[in-house]
Structures are given as structure tokens and as C-alpha cells.
Image 1: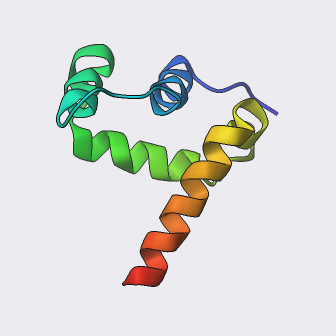
Image 2: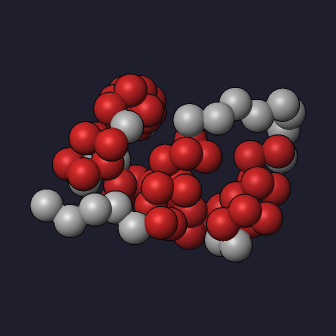
Image 3: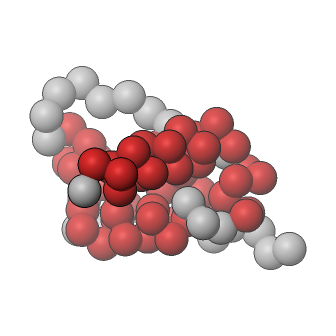
Amino acid sequence: MDDLTPRELAILALEGRGFAGPGAKERAIREQLGLAPVRYYQLLNALLDDPRALAHAPVTVNRLRRVRESRRKER
């Protein structure tokens, strides 16, 4: 199994952090990763289905999977 890329690791690390107020996360996405928030969330969504991400950060990935599933059910 291949290792996660540095960008994938950075995305998972960012998701494991807490953010102080509105807009702080989007600002961190732009400043630290150099990504537009839309692209970030596309990459994050793909990572949630990647077994490598689950093996690396199971608590974060499982939490985000639950959030994603609950939002899908709300629709």
C-alpha cells in the first residue's frame, strides 16, 4: 500500500484541528495548502473513501464519514 502524499497528510492534519471562528478554516486552507476551499473539500471527500487515510487517521476519517452520511440523509 502506498503512503499518503504530503498534501493528503496536510489535509488530514488540518481536519484534526479546531478553528476559532467563522472563516478561519477557509483562511488556513488558502494560506497553508494553497488551495481554494472548493478544491480542498473535493480532495477531502475523496480521502474519506481511501483506506490509507483511514489507517493513518481513523478517528478523524470516521468522524468526517459520520458527518458526511448525516448530511446526505438530510437531503
